[in-house]
Length: 332
Image 1 (cartoon, rainbow, N blue to C red):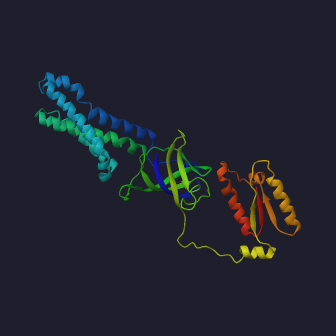
Image 2 (tube, rainbow, N blue to C red):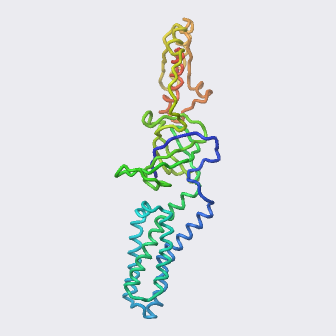
Image 3 (cartoon, one colour):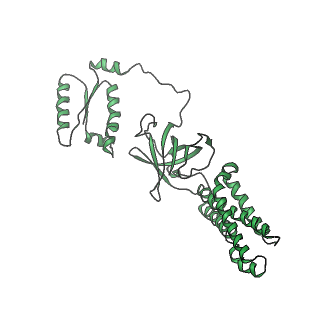
């Protein structure tokens, strides 16, 4: 699972809800993967094995030397697998793969000439190394181009999401930022994401419940990433808070009352709505402006919390608005 910090924005194209960087058709990616396997395993790694009896029969090598050549290829494969990511970080994954495929072909041509045992030993080691690099880098590089439908969970909401831009990967050891095109398992990065519809959210620093998210593969329904929301997109540097002349104090003054929120809590059927109704009726008789909100009213208004612990947030936001309007409010 990859971790990321994200900037969130909104777009109006539900069909573009894919977790990917733009790439070619799937068949092209599949063909690229097949070719990588043929070169990395078939040509660089195991092409030598079926030729061992013929090489010994032709007296190119003794049986002992043939075993050493096989060991050299295996050692090269392991070495290539270990250094693959470091090479890709310096030269780029695509450039590295192309170079390794050319080098693997060169190794095959070089081994067609019986110069000496050391000559073969070096080229077989190098062939194994190219195979190891190709097999480590091919899959993650090709998968970047495959469209994978994904959804994002923020709080109780589930939305289609597009990773519009991967800004950088964060090196957890040095704190350095690396320019990458994808995040592998357990890597951390910073990305811009677009949602298929408008969604209320907070930054993670403001609210951990509505400022965190998880990414889910829509096909397999498995979690592929998680992260924190840092800031919203489409923000302008020239935006300032607008102070209105008619504020909470002015609204309260014209109504001649002090705005507040009374929150009645308790078990279902314990009489919360009944008490709220009695209090509101009494305050209305005294000439005060009030509004009561219970679970049924909230459902009719579209305010539904799927998780019980999210009820305070779902009800708290409307309560704050009523309070700024100068009203006394009661909620269950």
